[in-house]
Length: 308
Image 1: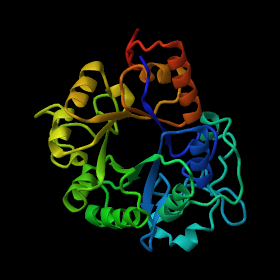
Image 2 (image 1 turned 180 degrees about the horizontal axis):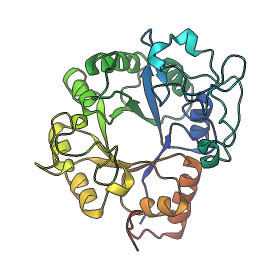
Image 3 (image 1 turned 90 degrees about the vertical axis):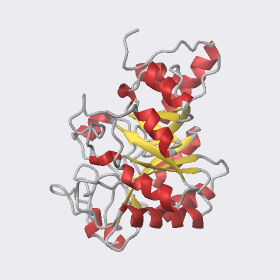
């Protein structure tokens, strides 16, 4: 039985290259990733840029003089694109937690936070099409500078301009974003991220959660609720998934893409679990393991979060 989960490079390929950079995305494409996951925030002048944290991180950001930021940097939403261009995000601060997590990550200079336009131009100039999980970072519990509808409109217009709608999914923890997409851009497929609060203090899935845009996990299982809402993908934290919920989701017509899996043991397990996709910081390793498993023709269903 062939093991076929798609492999998505999470923020490119942070195990090897600086995250959410054009260099990292190109690396993931070059090693054969089936898809890419990226994070979007808006600058003060309304430009979607690819970066994860609401504020510049002092562990990955240097100023125009090449010096590390002293403490958390300014908010992305407080900077114009030109101001953001002054910062270099090509290295991890030595001895930081990030440096320990990614000891083999390349250290680059003159590496800027890219715009969504620049990223999509890179995609168009590659000979191989890859799928895109475009995550809109927008919190229902914070005072955002733009509405969910406004953020979706900006991103959808750019995807359409680059003729990238068909290979893209809007991807979000804040399901208000995805409801806005369903109302205004039904042609855009939607990927619903989730993490259960039972085991994670910052989880988004709990009764009355503002992240779920009115859907109540006490009323019905998440796969059923998502299928009824017209979702294309359910993207749970991998340890929140089990055989039963995977089967429920797939029987309801959902693809299931789990995040974020990096360790070899967990990757092997999830590759054989029956999921449709795996989001990982190390797409090269995941692709190599997928090839090994298929070569051995072994695909026993195991879940990374369960004992064998």
